[in-house]
Length: 129
Ligand SMILES: CC(C)(COP(=O)(O)OP(=O)(O)OC[C@H]1O[C@@H](n2cnc3c(N)ncnc32)[C@H](O)[C@@H]1OP(=O)(O)O)[C@@H](O)C(=O)NCCC(=O)NCCS
Image 1 (cartoon, helix red, strand yellow):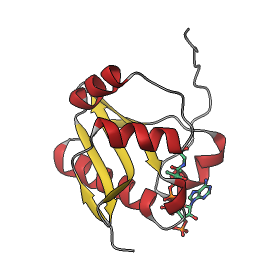
Image 2 (cartoon, protein in one colour):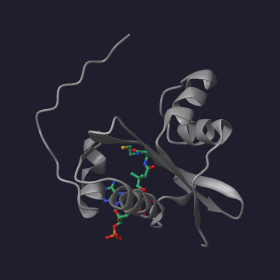
Image 3 (tube, rainbow, N blue to C red):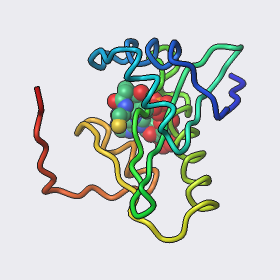
């Protein structure tokens, strides 16, 4: 499988991938704003189709990695690893020492640990309305 990593992502592709991995719906106008506010976006493209995505936001003191998703038809083939490595390369080139964090389900902990992330226990999450 030939994969190209690009720094673009349409609202349509974002919503399609989000739906494919069964994340909850977010209105398109909110997604548009979120993508515009992102400090870095990477998408994985194969045969002209966007099959994966990830993005980050920063306030200059910390970095948050968000929306890491690979279409289920293409999971387990190194695409997620490629997305995270692309983001890590960008961070190393662009920022000095900074806390880089993300939240994820227990089932993905090993995926991130393989990619150099350490699990920290103790986060408190408040689920809003
Ligand atoms: C998590 C996710 C991004 C991984 O992407 P992927 O393309 O399937 O992962 P890769 O094929 O690049 O896997 C890289 C390595 O991690 C391992 N891995 C992948 N998912 C794993 C998991 N859930 N548990 C343990 N190991 C995992 C792979 O076996 C591979 O190991 P290797 O390098 O030793 O061969 C993808 O499964 C996904 O989109 N899931 C649904 C959305 C989601 O939960 N996103 C995370 C939100 S933070």
